[in-house]
Amino acid sequence: MILLDGKVTAASIREELRGEILAFQLRAGRAPGLAVILVGEDSASHVYVRSKVRACEQTGVLSFVYRLPAGIPQQELLTLIGKLNKRLDVDGILLQLPLPKGIDSQICLAAIDPRKDVDGFHPENMGRLALGLPGFVPCTPAGILELLRRYELSPSGKEAVVIGRSNIVGKPLSLLLARQAPYANATVTVCHSCTRDLAGHCRRADFLFLAMGRPRCITGDMVREGAVVIDVGIHRTEDGLCGDVDFSQVSAKAKAITPVPGGVGPMTIAMLLKNTVQAWKAVEMERMR
Ligand code: GUN
Image (cartoon, rainbow, N blue to C red; front, top):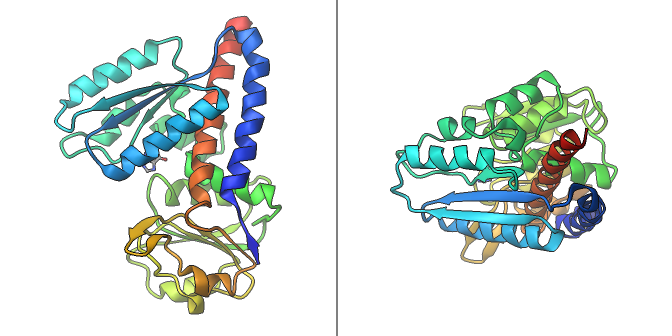
């Protein structure tokens, strides 16, 4: 059984990006910058934002964090996004989700300049992904594909089953897997809360992607012998963090599996940095032309 180590893989990606930043910074005359907006008191979001800021520091990306109260009027948030869109030292803008009640996340995400949309959640970048055009790809799906690439596990021609249809993970991941591209070309099935016979679909999967958000609900009997299992879930339980997968049961049958923590999570953050560097380079190359 291969343990797909996102922690080690993400660290080597950060090291590669650090080299890329050092080299390009000499020509650009400035470091890349990421603005992170966090609204309200969601405790998981605060943890994620701290991890993102730490990863920026380790890589040589400047970070600007805006912690705003839950009761902030939507208009004030839109004004901040408008200012960040104009700032020359900000290459990427990340609006941490979920947003508090009363704020329309789709309106706020659509206000971000698509060239600074390092999360890939703007309708333009989502549309580009659906059309197979270049653009920013959401970080969790991008991180999953990067992990498969680095372990040389190609889903091409295989049965890929994605459990979950969220805009952040399931939907973009299913689009990426079905693309005509290396480490894609899969036959993709998307399952969700209305799926009949979830276990039957899971058992057919050569590549199984879990993003349903329910702790340890995928058991050993639901997984095909030799499957590649990617667990996107992360849940705080009485006995520590766990994923959507019952790890001890499923790891006994899988060919390869991601641990929780230390699997997909660190890859998500590495892709955020990668997208920020991509945004920075695009702006600076345009300026140098
Ligand atoms: N909330 C959970 N995952 C993500 C993510 O990848 N980006 C943002 N902005 N918010 C999230």
